[in-house]
Length: 198
Image (cartoon, rainbow, N blue to C red; front, side, top):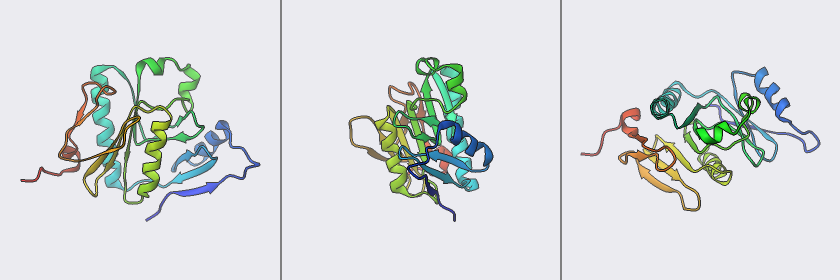
């Protein structure tokens, strides 16, 4: 199984957003991220099952958002330039309408210079857990207000909120969008096919 491959960019070579965009365009079958330290991360496509889980999670957020019209939802193909300079692509992301409208049309078409209000990462079999956990922490440090790290293998979700320790819950807990995704709830057992213990 392939894993993410970091490529170190020499300090003398700066990767501008335009150069990074060209790199992504030239290699559309791969998923790319850029760390705040200038390291390019190349991620291979996920397995089919993980892709299905991503699709279901994005759909749930999308349906809720279409009904409530509180912001904009994004799947893993969208990249965001965080305040620390990193370009990240959460598996699922959401930005409030108020914050989205502060961006110019040109900013919206590129890697929007904004950290999502909500970010979800799904741990796939090829992921390094510590790396994904660090990414969740990076989202918080750059302005994310709620994050969910979904780990299907052990049936847990780690909930990330600003200024508090991450909270780990099982798939038996109905997740709440709290004051970020107002009115949104998610029962992961419906997506991952797990039943409550009897």
